[in-house]
Image (cartoon, rainbow, N blue to C red; front, top):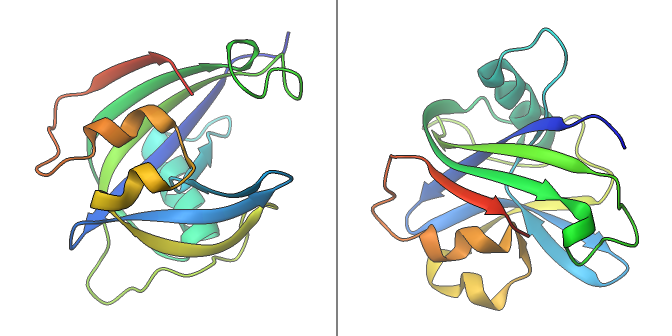
Length: 152
């Protein structure tokens, strides 16, 4: 079993739209919150700022922790591909400075093809991970952290 990985994600909502990275895999298009793994010696906020620069090309302003997720791969749809992955994801409500426009950053994930704004009303029509956050992304976003559990 690999060690547990800590990951940070940005929940960025503007004009009733969620900022996501658009990605592709053998099953088609899917969407993720911007963010990624924490490096040794890096604070959670430092990791999230770095990941957002790499993936969406902007310097985010970090707010409250809003979601916490365990992802134990063997319990989910990709179990045969990555059975020994266990990741803790911490999702923070973030904002963009007014003068910055999100775009593919300097080091996007290998599956990332673009950055998009998805309407909160249409999230159910998209393959977005983690799926469980769809029901909580209703305005106004509550600012007490919600533990989502081991979900996909």
